[in-house]
Length: 298
Ligand code: HMG
Ligand code: MG
Image 1 (cartoon, rainbow, N blue to C red):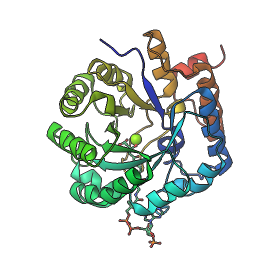
Image 2 (image 1 turned 90 degrees about the vertical axis):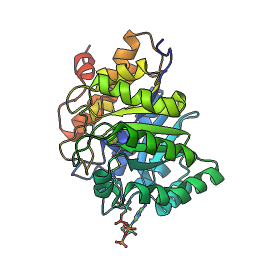
Image 3 (image 1 turned 60 degrees about the vertical axis):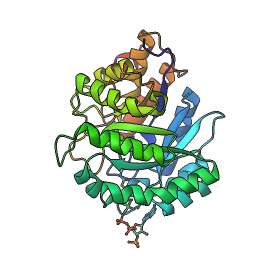
Image 4 (image 1 turned 180 degrees about the vertical axis):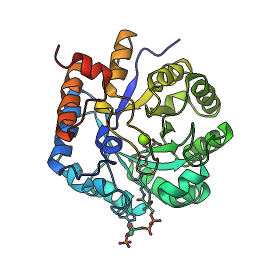
């Protein structure tokens, strides 16, 4: 049976904006997070505490966290690849920190400049510190369904990294299709393999929509027992270390599908549509959400 409730993690402010070439002013980022809070999201990925040399767009993470209006009950997550990032996140009172590794060796090197095993070693102190501080811990697995540098990624690598992240104490792990190449049967297979070893309530699906497969992949994940999904308002996004990858699946499209299926999210679709059009206009690009485009002037 499909779940009757789904948690949506809105990643637009982080995954959506991190690849923007022009610096997006801090007050725009803050307004984006605030609008999403008002729309009712229970989890918003607000920014990253990463090297500004690697991802200049996220250089104002501390200012963003300082300025946002926090909605009670909403978890504000930030990316923290190392202790330096964790200390920033702690000072900024993040509710959840995200360590991010990969199921592909080649991508691990390009994204965080170390091997998969080295990355897990580096995450260990971050994980320990998060547990000690009582902060939620999430682990993201990039290139779990395909890699721009090595192509196919063995299912065993995904399961292996998932188990290692859970062993580090992650409350939740993300199976991510960084470049948006996966198709539904493959997603069902990988999600089923992961949930044989990890409680499905701790597993999320993070789909980019490069090949237009993301909604089908979410449906396949629902069938495999997954009930947490990441999406990005107006389909913003892309990864700086994954050439050609487009944005995350658009939040509006996911909400439209789930609403039609009678699956509850607690999120106000109309409010998200307004925000999606606002940020698309700001960035001077067409709204990448199909549902957003169809519904914006209704
Ligand atoms: P490195 O160069 O190997 O490490 O980078 P380093 O320790 O030598 O640091 C380099 C410089 O960065 C130093 O500055 C550090 O002080 C500074 P310098 O001495 O040269 O002036 N630095 C920092 N500054 C601020 N905050 C920090 C920090 N750490 C070091 N936390 C490192 C290693 C991991 C730091 C680097 O590779 C990095 O920051 N990578 C970030 C990559 C990233 O953010 N990628 C995008 C997010 S992941 C993603 O999008 C995938 C996801 O959406 C899921 C999916 O779709 O797959 C999650
Ligand atoms: Mg991503």
